[in-house]
Image (cartoon, rainbow, N blue to C red):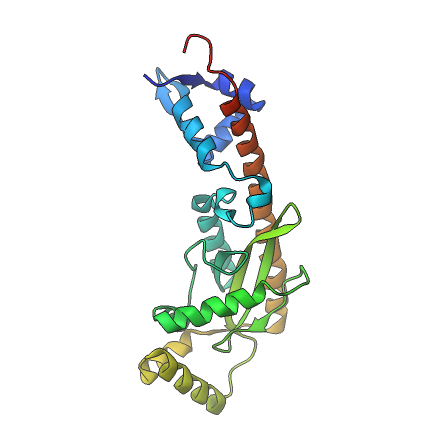
Amino acid sequence: MADLLTTKELQDLLKLDRTTIYRMLKDGRLTGIRVGGQWRFSRDEVDALVGNSSASPADSQALPSSYLPLHCIQPIQQVFAEIALVGALTTSADGEPLTEVSNSCSFCTMILGTPTGKQACLESWRRLAHQEDRKPRFVPCHAGLMYARGRIDFDGNTVAMVIAGQFYVSPADRDEEGRRLSTLAQAHGLDAKALAEASSSIRVLDERHEEQIGGWIQKVADTFEQVAHERAALMARLRNIAEMSTLPGS
């Protein structure tokens, strides 16, 4: 039978209090089993987790998901998107999606549903990575909707981004939008009429709301950044466990 650590043994190894251990159990950062009403933690699972997190902090830009528990981030992102009335997702530093898009409008969902449309969105997301200032700045995407990013930094490097948008700041000019929709439909093999109907789902938010959203994006990104740092610290402690000898009697 695999070695099982008691909560106290795990506390001593990780140098964490019992409340923190239970909080990590609740949010998925740790897994455990009940034995006689008490929590036990598999040494094999701890070793496996250490093996999956062997990247050093310097490698975190290439492996952001090692430090971002996506099963926790996705629901937070969903709540933010619904409250802010935007579409949102979390990507790697180079714009590759790490989460599913939350609260996407029908128009963007149609475009993302095509290979060329998804590629165009990816290129728009990647352009955000080149913005030098940390503050989110809204710019138009390839389809003419506004979007911005909040940076998630780790050890001085941007490891991921929270991207939010999918809205206009004022009603689109009908003639101009008609020409743009016709071009988009042709470029991505979509039915022009269906795309025009879906465009009615594009939200129109005023500049004040846009400014608020910019602040919210960075707050969400800062929260994810804190989670990444806490998770990296946990991984470092787990790596220390792997280097220790097995427990007496194992």
